[in-house]
Image 1 (cartoon, rainbow, N blue to C red):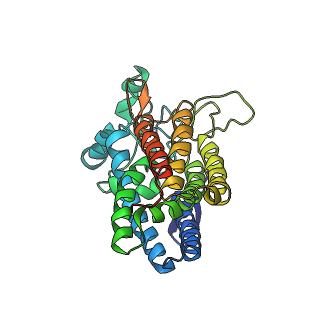
Image 2 (cartoon, rainbow, N blue to C red):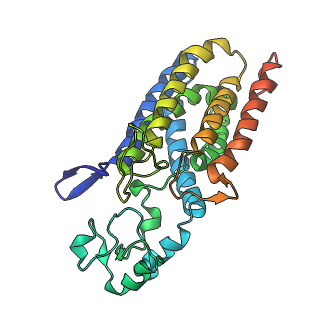
Length: 302
């Protein structure tokens, strides 16, 4: 893992944010080229990408904070950070701050709680009332971004005369290349990991004692392959507006529902289904609706 790629003086350059920005630039390039090839304003397509990036980050962060089970931790980080139990340190006991690693501090009074199994570690993070806004440290959900960025993007595309479904089809491959690069950032950051495994492809993530599935890389590879399939295989064969976007929702949605079985990071759940699985099922249904509905039409409606 390499959460910090490098330093520029005293400034840390986080891998997570860097990969997100690389993903955005790749998506913007693809969207502009595809938009201009389709006779649309390339600058308007880039503007659309910027809007969706902003809305996507807000939505992704909001859903993560509300559903990943750490809302109370963000409150405690501002009020009493000793109540926050870190999940990314393998150190259970400590006698000094330096043993905890990073910027963690050592709480000597927490030893009885750790012995009793009530806490994972005696270490705790420093007080930080702004932690909830620091998305570059991790804590974004793809579906959260999609749920806010897509409606905003639809409205903007209509306003600029791009055609909502037409723009959605053009952006479908771009979204996948952005996701493929962004998930590499998740891997470098050590978040979004999978369940324990004894296989040769297992990776030892910070704060864990056994290898785990690198589910971030699984999703990265799949997203890249889906980018190729959407842009060069399906797009020439789908001639109704909304079909390509619908195909993306279905194919990614099915993959994500299955991938969640291997995930083992804290991400929220209701009963046996994770938050992403709960959102993924109606996303798949929406994709099927767009694909079938527009397949039966001879003229685009949007």
